[in-house]
Image 1 (cartoon, protein in one colour):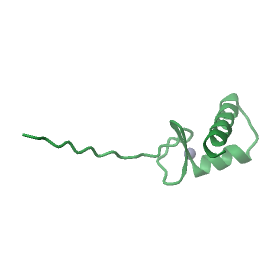
Image 2 (cartoon, protein in one colour; image 1 turned 90 degrees about the vertical axis):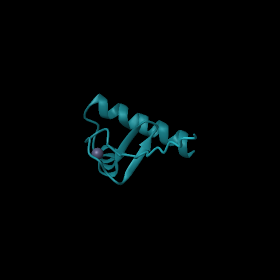
Image 3 (cartoon, helix red, strand yellow; image 1 turned 30 degrees about the vertical axis):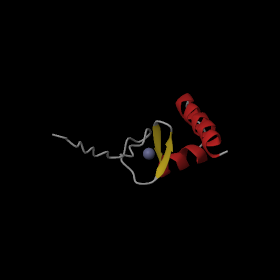
Amino acid sequence: MLKTRVMHIRLTNVCVICKENKQEGIHIVHAFFCANCEEEIVKSDVKTRVYDNYVKKVKTASTFLYD
Ligand SMILES: [Zn+2]
């Protein structure tokens, strides 16, 4: 008897910064940045190395994906 497996894949957009589930944002490979945080990162001064790294990753990935 043939069994059909149905997989329900739920795409959750959990922001890597604020850890909230958001509808809008960008996916950078394995990371999701909600629109809010992405804007904050882009607009605000870089305060920590973590943020600096995130910005670099976003820019690198963006260039890679959209160039
Ligand atoms: Zn966020």
